[in-house]
Image 1: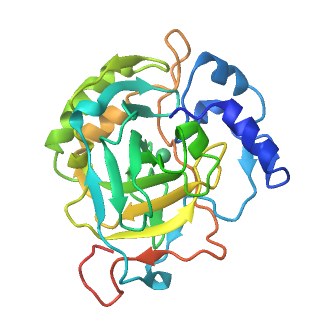
Image 2 (image 1 turned 45 degrees about the vertical axis):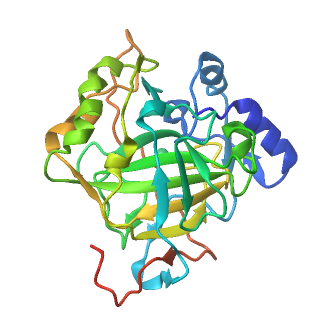
Amino acid sequence: MVFSFRAIFAFTKRFPGRYQWIPVRNCNLVSCTQNINTAKQQECQNPVTVSSGTRQSPIDINTAHCVYNPQLKPLKISYDPNNCLRLRNNGYFFQVDFEDSKDSSVISSGPLKNHYRLKQFHFHWGSKSDRGSEHTVNNQVYPAELHLVHWNPVKCNNSDEAILSEDGLAVIGVFLKLGKRHDRLQKLVDALPAVKHKDAAIEFLNFDPACMIPSCSDYWTYPGSLTSPPQTECVTWVIMKDPIEISPEQLATFRSLFYTSTGEKQKNMVDNYRPVQPLLKRTVYSTTSPFQNSVSQ
Ligand SMILES: [Zn+2]
């Protein structure tokens, strides 16, 4: 994503004391929602900011403690496949970027007060199938998790600004479990060998990310953060309750990518997830009551 370190510096200046400069993991683990370019890679050699805040992500969703909110509407999702631009390996995961200068691929309703524009999507996954998702449900881990990242054009001028706003981003999380082949995802899987190494990028057009949204509209929602530095607390998370399926072969292709650049000693791109963070005083709201038997958890 296009969150520059300039924006991160601005943020720490704006909220001194709220976020600390401390050493964290190496920056081949760059953010869930960060863009990579040479300048940023150089920045990444230095300590980067990490939050000591109170609404960090991901979390374990304990379904017994979720609060049913009958006011929650289904999320409205309207994506234009023509907004799909490129596929790239940013050294942490592969990411598909979208044109976001207009309100042509947006989500609204659900827990959101404004509409949000799609900026990019990416996945997190494990080296083995007993790990990989960032969020967990009753401590159950999935082999992978999709994040569709959107920013708020009503309150912010661009996605860099959005990470400075407590309601700047809305991220849809979708769990992936192993099962049958996801036919519409195969176009993306087929393109992955072209971006095996860090910083590789190719044109990737006409892909509809709505094909990765489960048919069941039930979700959990809570206020959280980016899951990698700068870990700013700007995200309304919408975690779909039903997982989607991909085949073992499709997930194996994810694992065949590299964190490393061409010519460097190869390091497989796996286990690119952040561990769960404490819920603290937050409430996770649910579209279904615990007594409804409409979800898989
Ligand atoms: Zn992510």
